[in-house]
Image (cartoon, rainbow, N blue to C red; front, side):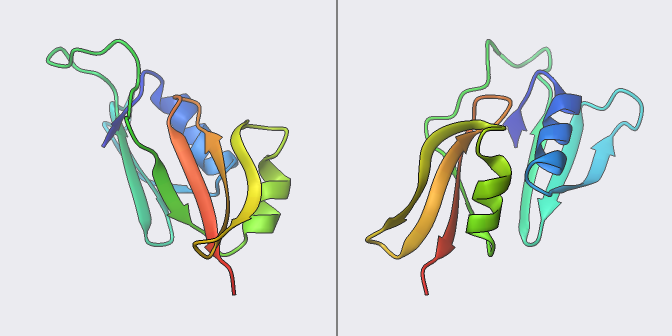
Length: 114
């Protein structure tokens, strides 16, 4: 579960740019929680509540998503989202690139090199 200040913007980013589907939100009117899915991947987001000491979204790591269409996704996203590192082939057998989502979270998107 990742925290976001703007749930509507987050849903739009993940559905529009990354092809995720919003499979749930609660409550329907002015939601504070949403589940975004793509294939076997599911990422849940919620807005800060009174018990949360929240200044801004933070994560000390990154989120790695394996995809089947890395070159197509790169062409779709470059120039439209913040690139953390460009598309490249890595010695560990992945072709990947990194982006920053609308909350500042780093997403590594990769595909096995065959």
